[in-house]
Length: 82
Image (cartoon, one colour):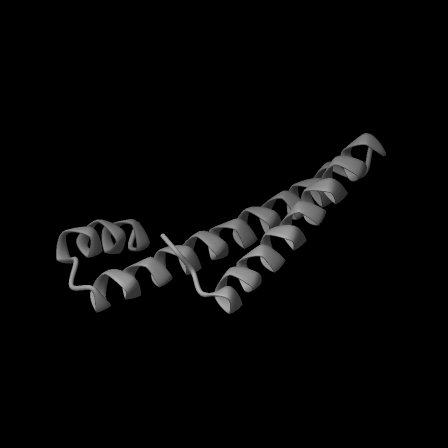
């Protein structure tokens, strides 16, 4: 699956931000921060990862649609709707 540079850069930017969120969660946990605060950050990070996954699948669905790869498109759409 090849991406155009702008899309790739946006995904990498988002993944780097998520990486920073994970580092922050580790620091919070090690600093014995409130469990509720740590869990809130875990949930926010999980949602951010889900957003990246959805964007990747959407981009791939568009590619399959353009290339008329219907079998692949069906699999991707099922994953998106999960």
